[in-house]
Length: 96
Length: 348
Image (tube, chains in turn green, red):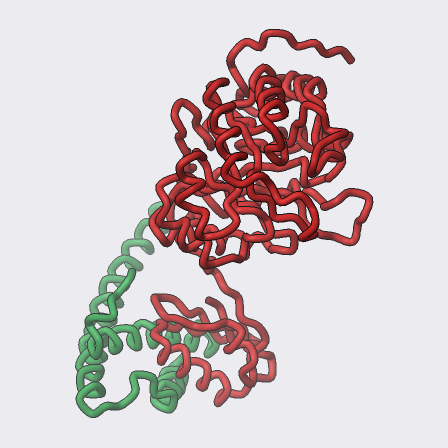
């Protein structure tokens, strides 16, 4: 039992880092959203999204397989795209 | 909305759909599966699913929210109860509306009203403007008929539901009736429905003979959107390939509508079958299935009725039916006409 508790404590610590890193990433996404708005560029840029996914797959050393990493980052990209939209059009509303 | 891409959809096709959804104002959640990609579109975007479904690479588009809003249980989780005086439609008590198809004469209206009151009906039904399939059939007495119905309802302490066929009759009928009935043939008369949205009295909206439940709820939406939140939905049979009965009463519509909507459900077993000898069985089934109210045609002398004689019950048949319903309703936690009835006069 105590082994599990120790491992869970470590997972909690990693989660704290993940949340901080995701938010650090989100700050940049927000900035990009504002720049895209100024430059009248579309929020959705499929080529860039494909590059991001290719990049994280190339870094992957397991035990998650490439498919798992892709799916996890698709969710991160979904949320970044939403943030960029909100940065560009704050009046369009959020929703949770 | 969920967009399921085809197994062989190319990346370019997937990207085109995402771009379109983003442009429509959705937040897109992409999940790339082993064989196919699914796109979840959430938020306040506006899209025609059929328009997306015909795009290259799309397998199917699933709508997850209903096209009607105010009529939906999502909008209002608790049941709507419509109160007319001391009668509550949509509460624990099953309300029975009964009376002749049409007002024909003072004597016929009085005799029929007295009979339905004695049996336990709370609301008198009866038409003064009749939408008949043939222009040569009896079309109703008009305002004199409304006066007869109102006077009989008042004499017997009943409320009155009667059909409104056109916009110009709304002010006239509003003077006499407690509930506007919109007939099956007018279910998609959107200008009439819109106008009833501004009326101050409840609306009983019959299901069109070829209407889906979704179309029916969208018709209710027209009334609700105008600000009149007192709409009850009346199942009265739909057209099927079966010709033995006049229509096929869709009993399953009762639980379906009650799941999708908060509005009370009324069942009309008279039009639902078109045959007097089948009305009682369908009325019993409707109460057992959870109907909030029934609307039944009763005539003091059905064999000489000017309209719908074949489906009008004799007063004695109606009394027997009410006694049976009083046994069925408690089995599902409902009551029916709690007042004592003078004489049951039935045997089995």
